[in-house]
Each structure stands twice: as structure tokens, then as C-alpha cells.
Image (cartoon, helix red, strand yellow):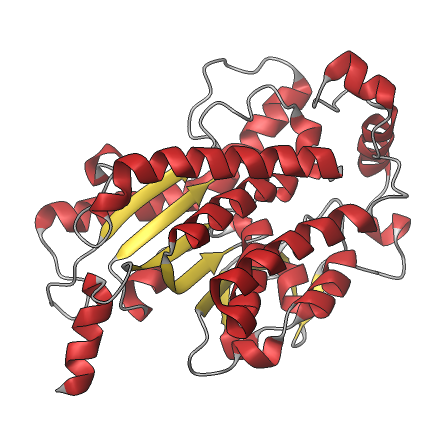
Length: 346
């Protein structure tokens, strides 16, 4: 009986802010926007039950949970800053580093920088197996340095659901807390034109965003909190139809990375509209919330997803922090009560 009362109390937020689940999309360095979102939510006092993430969302999720295990909300915020500063520092010698002329001519846009054009041309001519024959993956190094995987295996740790795409089968595979390690996080963020497929337990994996960006169903079926906050980096809508080759490829990739999430949302809307229960015919509540980049990324260019200059990452963090502050003013009162987006619009 006491356990049941505590479960109800957690769902309703008795004794503090309501517990929520987080669904974190990938998007390369655009994940720094998510850093700002998480920083503001943690500052607000939101308590986290579970996090589903792919690619950059997986890194944010694991680092947040690791920091939380050691220092609560303050520890999580400090760990997230450490993640993005480490990512930026690791690329200081990269040809993608911006010059003062880049800032002067194009602002944050790096589509016309010599470094990006060099990398883009190399990616068309040779695979990562030729350009990086040792298979070294800097993301695995960063994850091994910053994430306490032992702490993530404790019973009281934030629940994690990390998406991987099996190269051979093309199917989604989810890894949970006790199954995580540096290679799992590297696999979730493995873009096939930049990195060799990452081997985990004898199988090879690419970016989890191909099959779930991110997966919502584990948050619904395996977590007790009824609220899911989706942090969305991939735009659903583009006003213009692309006509240039690079723009066509970019938009096709956006659609591919968003399609699985779209189908999940459509299924949720169908089940919610027909009054189906979530667990064995039960009456589980489900509240969906969304924080996205709005129009902030439209003019940043295709190269912005691999731009890890510290000023740029801080710019994205500040945008995420600001947008979330505005979102909380309008929607914080809905947490634990109802959805703040219309399920039937998907």
C-alpha cells in the first residue's frame, strides 16, 4: 500500500515538481540547443523519471543521468556543460574551425567555409574506412571520460533508453542502463559517412536516429511519469521546396530522421483518440509536451550540425535556455495534468 501511494505521489508531483520523461532528438552540434533546454528545466526543478535519446540526444541523456547520480540537478547541469566544452575542445585542430573571416562574411553559417567544403568533398570521394582506417571514434573517448556507467546501473538512476540502428538488419535496438558503455553511445551517434560502423557485442551499428529519433514507446510503457517532453531539433515543415542537390539531400535526410517519430506520434494520437489504455487495457495517463527550435535553425546552414566552435555551441545553448523559459511560462502549469500539444495534429 505504501509503495502504491508513493507511486501516485510521484505521478502527481506531491512534495515537489512533477516527474517527467524526456525524449531527446539527435542533430549533431544542434544538440547544444538541447543542452540549453535541459539546463533550464533542471533549474526549474523538474524531476526526471526516464530519458529516451538518439545520437546527440543519447549523449545528453547519459551525461545528464551520470551527473545527476553524483550531484542531483546541479551535478547534471555541470556535467552537460562539461560535455559540450569537451566536444568543442576535441575539435580545436579540425579544419572546420572557423576563422574571423568566416564570422565576418557569413555569421554562424559555415556552408561556404573552406573547411566544410573540404570535408564535404572528401566524404563524397572516400568512406570512413579509407579516411580513418584505425576506426578511432572520438565520441567513444568523450563518453568514456565523462559518463559514470557504474552509477547508471544503480536502481535509483534515471532510466535511459538509447537508440541504435543495426546495420545488417536495419532494425531499431534499444539499450538500457545496464547495457550502456562508451561504444553504445558512439554507435547511437555514428553517422555512416563520418564514422566507421561501431561494433557492440559482435554487431555493427549506425546512428539511432535512422530508426528512432527518439523512441517514445519505452517512456510510455516502462516509466511511471505520465508526462513526456519532446525536445525536437529536426524541423517538421520547410516553407520552400528544395531545388539544389545539396538542399534536396539535406531535406531528404531530415524527413528520414523524422519519419519514425512521426509514425509513433500518429499511433499515439490514434490510441489516445479512441480511448485505448496503455498498459494491458488499463487507463494510463499520457501527456505530451514539445519544445522545438522554431525558426532559429533555418538560416544556420547545413554545416551547422558539425560546427562545434565554442561560441556557436553557447549561442545554441542560450537559444534553448531562452525558448524553454518562455515555454515554462505558458506550459509549466500543464505538467502532471494534461498535454500542452494536440495529439490529433500529427
